[in-house]
Image 1 (tube, rainbow, N blue to C red):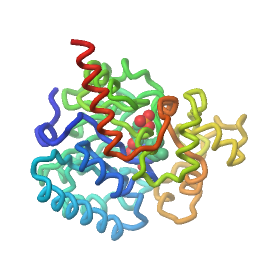
Image 2 (cartoon, helix red, strand yellow; image 1 turned 180 degrees about the vertical axis):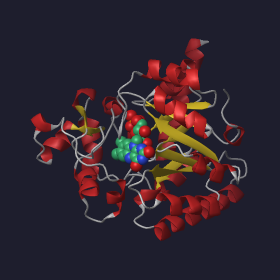
Image 3 (cartoon, helix red, strand yellow; image 1 turned 135 degrees about the horizontal axis):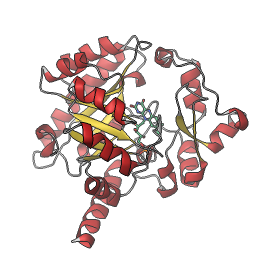
Image 4 (spheres, rainbow, N blue to C red; image 1 turned 90 degrees about the vertical axis):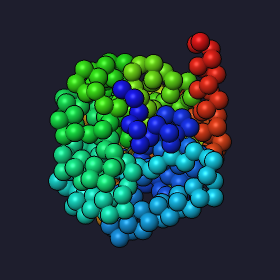
Length: 320
Ligand SMILES: Cc1cc2nc3c(=O)[nH]c(=O)nc-3n(C[C@H](O)[C@H](O)[C@H](O)COP(=O)(O)O)c2cc1C
């Protein structure tokens, strides 16, 4: 399956910098788009729909301006993440704003709703949906999404537990649209490996926490530099659904390491409250994927994308 037509000529590398709670903002997303890869942020990184709308206006204005000033450069489109869950009162008003401002790509988590697909397709946008298993991939295919994000074992955030080789093939069995592979990717050769496996695009989160444009504090980025894959603990204890966190930050936050198997309550609306448990948890307990072991620096997005390009090209020429 080729990359959707809307994307094929607008990317330097088949890569999306994934949306991350409390980490991605227009600053990071704009830097990605200007560097030629898809940049993104979750709608819930703004506390209100009004604030979210301001971000959309900023994205559209700055990218239009940039394209005008740099007509020869490849400028990638941006994406917005909507958590489609009954406990998130924002998803419908935020979807209306995506339609109003014609957000090029909407990334949905949890619910794969045909309502979202119809709304985004009405203006020519694309919908990509996060899954961790074949059952949810089938539902997303039925809802008519354009792309499915295979969130495999070892990913940051709400990671899956399935091996990427297996997950991509399982999704391909039930879906002939674009597949995006997520989970531990951090080098240019990983992007090529994702394509070799049958994915159309690569999806990287943790690698982009350690960029100058992310909202992460220095201690978070330093912990990523120090951490290895064995430090990533996949536990439902922090946010109710299993997610990946660095052992060092769980310990520093005083978590009982023996009790990490117990789930808490799931409530995405809680992300909206200024000092709610969820936001406090993700602020003090830092999420990251197993790719931490491959991250040794903090660089600008532009430098990172240039490096990923070089690694991708050198891996391709090595294989030819
Ligand atoms: C700190 C952090 C926050 C995240 N927040 C979100 C989020 O709000 N919405 C979402 O769809 N995915 C979220 N994710 C998951 C990423 O979008 C992506 O699937 C994942 O980071 C890919 O795996 P990698 O980190 O190993 O590259 C988050 C990931 C991290 C590390």
